[in-house]
Image 1 (cartoon, rainbow, N blue to C red):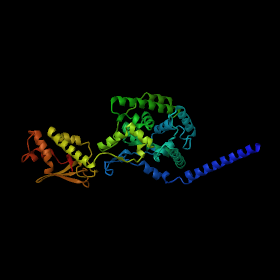
Image 2 (spheres, rainbow, N blue to C red):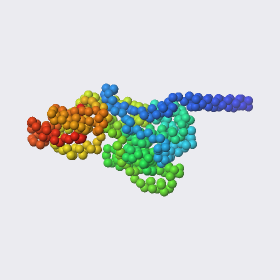
Image 3 (cartoon, one colour):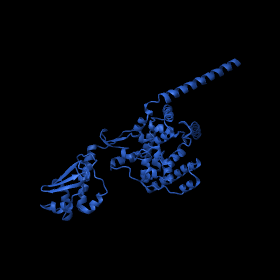
Image 4 (spheres, rainbow, N blue to C red):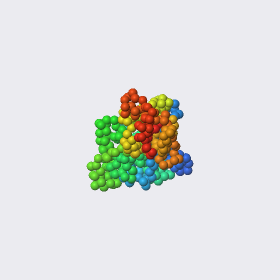
Length: 441
């Protein structure tokens, strides 16, 4: 019996030794020696610049993308406010600087809490694991997918310093429908640069990364929904500040001052072209039902998913309808209010000319009058101020007739029609060289 137990003990030791050898060998090969191209900085940068396109109903004509260049402001670790880096670590993974990608103690504690509660009440993922999940698109919640995510976390930890991992994380988290990363979040929530964030603002952004739409007052539809979002934001920010104080990232005075401050929300400009269809798609993506559906398919971050969205909108019908609407609104505007040059120039003064736009039929553009000829009538336009290399257009007499008729009816009777001389006496006298005018192609 004694010999049998001894043999079993030796066999167990040999088994454990073999298991350890396999584990060490696997780590050396899959993490150190052959981590794969996906872990290279070039591949990660490609992932961070990934876009999620939105198409018309034909599935090929693009309406826009979720995260065009205006929605990205990549920040290095050195450009990040220290308060934000500390807030992320304090609220998401306080052992970040001491573990090797996986916090097994925290993972075990989370598993126990979830088993006791009978549902998921606590997560055990480190910042490194969350970065791996967001960068390398975990496709499901299966054991295999989670082990793959774990492998990528170990690869990140081995091949990059902690500061670089935090940099990756801070540049890819989702900010509502407006973009991703700390730079966009600072502009979107508070209308300022990331380097200008206060402690309270940095703590709010760090606390909102897991549920941005839940804490975002800018997307709420009613005053009551805004109030609830602001209250929840205050609670979440207080939690982050408490964690920062507990871990000695801030002292008692800074903690108390921050707790007593309101979160100074001020929505900033993060997109530069009006696209109502894209706005509607972004609003739809913020719906909790849609977010839950994505989550069931392993998509926790739309920003890095590379999804393709196909709408039910017919491109030709949409464009012709939009052109008709804009044309009619322009006509009605002159018919009801006339053409007041001084007022219009004051309105257009703060708007950029459309010199960088791709010109196509049916488009409306803000242009500048470069020269006016009277015989025959030709108004020469530029789309980029003094830059003569930008596209040039001409409005001829036929192109002025709709505006002229509307102005004649504003000044006379609603059934009036232009007569000879009206063009020069009524409309052209309101248009000067250097004026900005809204035109259609």
